[in-house]
Length: 119
Image 1: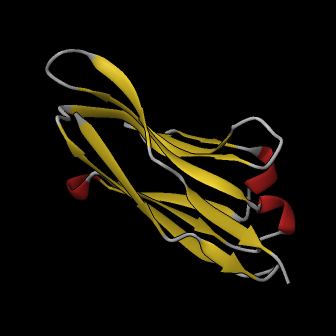
Image 2: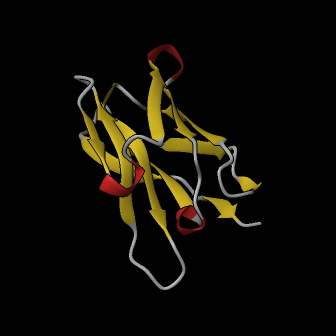
């Protein structure tokens, strides 16, 4: 089993910043990719940013230049640094993990952390 523990969400004013973190633990032999998706009310879940084991990044166009993603491989932790936040960034943010254990390769999701951008 794998556990993803997310933290860092909250309420912030437009133009503000937040940092989300996600720590993975459990039966992880290797990580193929790790990052973040989000889901706003009434919308489908969408990619925000994901980084692969080869340090290739995949980004939503809407966050390029404002969000950055960093990893601490020793801690199996990924961070999403969100700057210049806009009301349209309001969503539940989900940590995503593509990993392999001794039994195979799987996807895992965190429970989500709420980010609200409002004045």
